[in-house]
Image: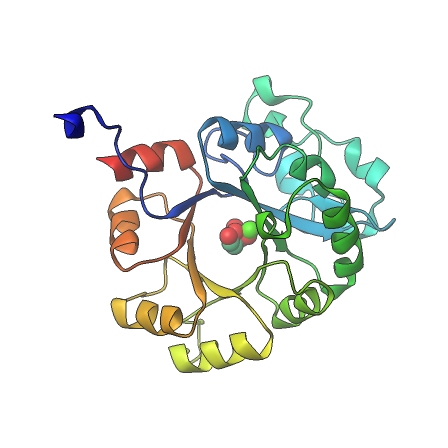
Length: 256
Ligand code: G3P
Ligand code: CA
């Protein structure tokens, strides 16, 4: 029958590479992004800070020590100073020479229709430069969702760019504080004009929570999921997307 010949259906969920394909390549580099596209990720996530000379650069930590071996505070350094570092070698000799990318360089790798999730790790001071880079890129507003833990950053992004999706990163069970209820988070998300919530997989996320978020018209994303059993459960409760270090492998596992 034709059913037997049909290729496995894509999972009904957006698969987003975490810092690119960071299981296999050095996180937040052009190599990691290109590999995530080769692995057929629907989107890929990266982290940005603003340099001393006002450029949006892609790196997860505020300091270069972990990925470059030499410690330099990113907000206190110029783009040229940061570009002199090697952030590939720590992941293997074959990645030697990878540089800290600029945001525009990473956006330029995205194939047609793919999405780049831009996580703002600094404050709203980056928004003007972010807006400039997004406008200069060939990508549509919907291809560059912005994510941030800071409600102030989400509010500032939506004020500058109502057309760019923004998903608020939230913790349901903050250490040492009472759990946050869906109603409370949804109300705050609406106040800051967020288009969705982006939750940690370590939080207990159940059907009822997902239903409330979806009923409020918000998207629901979850990070960072490398376990196919967890991913299947999340697909089952209707999340819109999953961020993973292994986009290619996870897609294969979900197709089984
Ligand atoms: O996708 C959100 C997730 O990346 C947030 O955590 O520490 O990996 O930036 P972190
Ligand atoms: Ca991130």
